[in-house]
Image 1 (spheres, rainbow, N blue to C red):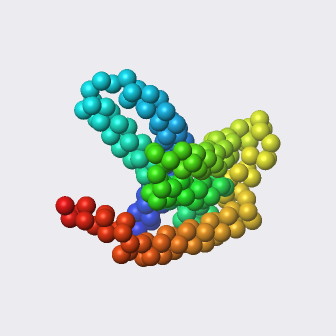
Image 2 (tube, rainbow, N blue to C red):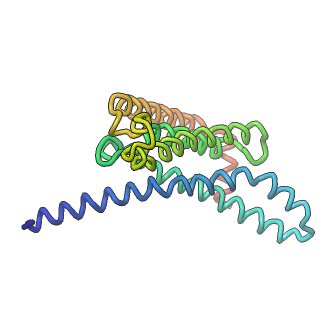
Image 3 (tube, rainbow, N blue to C red):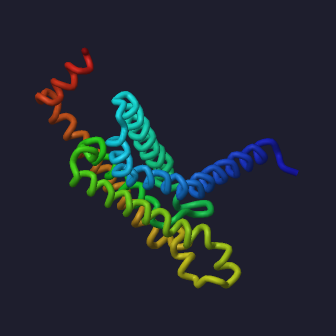
Length: 213
């Protein structure tokens, strides 16, 4: 017979594990939408050229940009959970390169924030490359590691599939997590320093004047 505290702990632990695994399982779908909208940009631009109504073109473009960027932010926010040691290194495990995927996705988001991929072809190419790398780092171990676990148990896949799960390969998972967290911290620090250095520059002054207007 479970006590009240034991029942509450079981519900909390089970609920948290269910939530993390649900996020991990649904992220490949969100990644597919994110990549689809990102690489749909040439099609959207061609479609805009066919519109004769300026208002309709503005609404179409703004709807596309808002949906695309919102999906990018949602994907990044959901992926941050893979940076938690108690989630990545415990429980049922996650894709072994999930933290690296979050890091590369963070870099892709920074390209969007600090540069102009919509008007600069090189920035768009850089962001596209980072997004493809990040999606591969997440989807491959998720599909061939986490989702294929039952196939390994049934003997249809070799033991190499278990090496793609963090809790089954802790000797590699721990360095990946700590190195990723370190690079994350360095990247965030550099962005913060850049922000401080930009304060008082003509661009920052123009932005402040625009915000006040």
